[in-house]
View 1 (tube, rainbow, N blue to C red):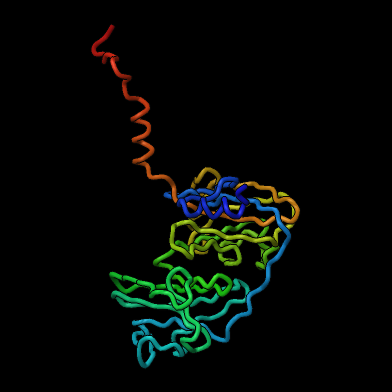
View 2: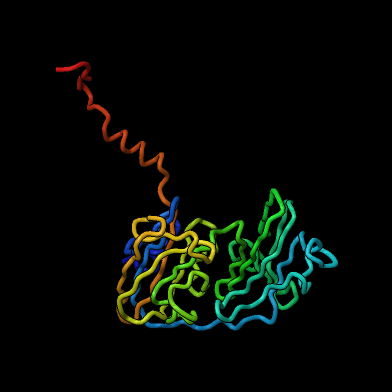
Length: 267
């Protein structure tokens, strides 16, 4: 028998969110299926590093003495205890840039693409001067930026249970949907939501300027969901099937059957 965790993993590998899900929509994306996996609560807070540095070939542009400097304070991220995420924003010139993240001013522990220890560099290609925000989550070791990734959160009336200062806060990254493996599926799991009935949406770029609700409608109605006791709740935002594929399937369905005659003119 395949366990629930295995099913969820298989679905993610197939480029979609797992089945039992409440979906919050986004324009070109199906957003936020909500998967309820019942198991005992087991969350353990990650011990934060002393410092987190974005090290790359653009550090000289930001005031460092050189590039790929693991200890340069000019490119250190700032830990936000309210969000439980390291982050910082810079203005970068146009260029073909690469970077990783280093912990505690050393290359001894560093993370690259796909949140991998000693992983490959992350590419950041900018055609013009651009404001870029970098994010690092020490729980998942995901390092990303606002150009390479969609910054999606799940605001709702449950966020205060996660440690946010209030509910319906699109800027609280404690309900941040992440995509460490880069397959386009953004997920967030928590076992901190007590049993009860709740509502949620998906918000983009930590703001209500762009949000999606029921059926993927921009600014649409809240999505209602119910959490049983001792449940791990997984929010998942997955790619929508391309319109061309849906249209081609419709065309196949309306093709004439073999041997049928076409009609023209009026009866």
